Every structure is written in structure tokens, then in C-alpha cells.
Amino acid sequence: MQSDPLIRDRTAADLLGVSVSTVWRWASEGTIPGPIRIANTSRWRRSEIEAVINRAAAERVAA
Image (spheres, one colour):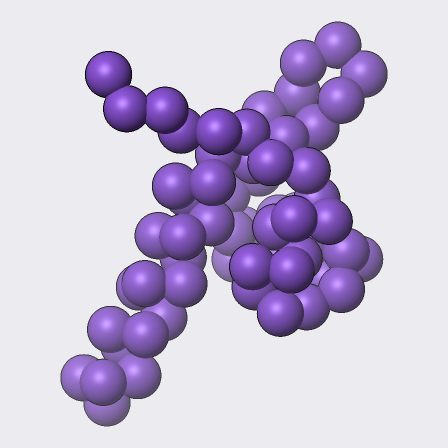
């Protein structure tokens, strides 16, 4: 089984090249998947954030 680490909003922001507030706005707008909430924390699956990036890159190439 491959590991799919959960990442914080700061790490998601770094991967996407945006601010933390943009990550939260995009999540609320549905641009990126919403976080997984565990107790009082919110985390994203790294693979889901990477999929958003890959999808955007594929759309750019196709356009």
C-alpha cells in the first residue's frame, strides 16, 4: 500500500504557489477538494492537490 500523506494548508499552498487564504477560498468554491477534518485539524491528501495541479497542466497543454 502506498502512502498518501495528509498535508497542512501551508504545504498545500506551497505546492499550488498561492497563499493559505487562497487555499481556503478555493476549497470553499470547489476549485480544489475540501479538507479532511480530524478532531480540530484540517488536512488535504497530497495526491488530491497534485491531481489538481496535473489536471490544470493537462488543460493548459490541450488549449
